[in-house]
Image 1 (spheres, chains in turn green, orange):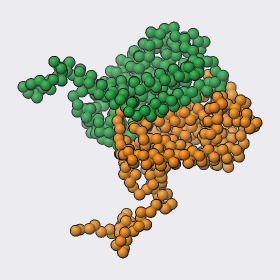
Image 2 (cartoon, rainbow over the protein chains, first blue to last red; image 1 turned 60 degrees about the horizontal axis):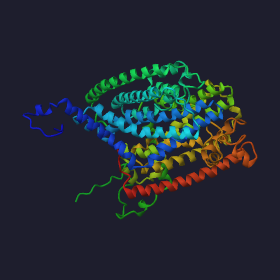
Image 3 (tube, rainbow over the protein chains, first blue to last red; image 1 turned 120 degrees about the vertical axis):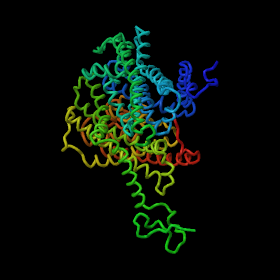
Length: 292
Length: 324
């Protein structure tokens, strides 16, 4: 019997007492429902192909030419290309995850999410799934085209670990996005300003265009708290394993463990913070407060 | 039937009532004069500034305003240090000035485009702004100016940090002020024109267009000679760069502030040197090139904006809101 099928109940309390199965499948539908507009939107307005695929490729190319103008070793071009691909995920996390609940509040959807019989984490997970589709397309485009055009030579000796690190980076990144979303829930207009603030400064401390180990203590701090920094560094070590460049950072195996820890911490913290911030937002009457 | 009468002594409603002879004043339907346009622009600029600045306390606003351009400059400074050991102070100055000026570009392009998205998607006021007596483009320009002000502050502080902390050599007595003023004026017009172009695009696109201005700026970065000379690019890209007013603007500012420094347009292996036989363009050439390329971009932007405006009205895009 479908979990959505009507069942006769003796009282409202009995009707509201959902089984775990019923709650799970409803949340699963919420995930798909939230992911759907992001996935279908990609096909409805093709302008993103130009703005999301072609232009970021040119922006990445600019840093390739910076290294070329300095006659840098070829590995650095590979670092830039990999970093350029990873920006797609970071931008998606801060623009379409972290600040999304603030957006939803402005648009009037937020109160509907809280009133619906679903877990708000399902909504965030749906956002992440939908955003990942678009970001992965953009990242793959940058990676493939830039690698071919600029002749990047990858040297992958542990492909399984590389794949595992990539997925761990994604889970940690989107976990961080969920955590930030809860903060943005109680913030007002500063949410968008802070979203902007999380671009170049994070690119710098994460070593998006250079090995993060070159930043010394600042780089070590970034590896400890920013999934983009640690994930990118591990992927660079694994994708250019035979190179002569000294990274000066922990081995990919250790960085993978850091990512596991980050995933767990960020997801639990996101869940706890969402509850706490929701409670606070309810008390302060901020859940439906727009444009402030 | 009761009719509200306008009290002529009320300063707010003075001039809004019927003419004394009771008929229809046709002059009110005519295009606004310069004075009214200026008033619209000033009001929009003031509103824009308040929206940009009053969301937080001044300290946080200051940090926010300078963090982006300073971080962008630091990325390139670290790259220089990694690859060349930071041994070339001239190139460091080249990079710092280029990134500082780029914060102007980002602010100018994003300011106008975001005004459209803010008013349409977030505050849902675009249709009301549109039907007000003010010229829509003038209002948008006013809103964008505030953001350019923030960008200017970021650029100035980035250069200051470059001089004080990053070893950029700068001599105030060497600055060619006239050239600086002229190229800044022409450059800002060009940046605003590109911003108008992006506003035209954002009138047509959905909410995700928030980061389109940044994507466009990132692409222009490649052909502007902001942080590396155009000479390192393939010839077709160099040719595109020579048609880009931003490349001439940055070259002009560099020549004014660091006379005799590295050229972003000329130099060994550059298309400019191959065609003209000169090492780098002189001040007059830069001003003329900036005037011509900026003028063309301005004309194209105005035409595109008017077309986009007509299409938006035709398709009901002015009060459309989207989700994702």
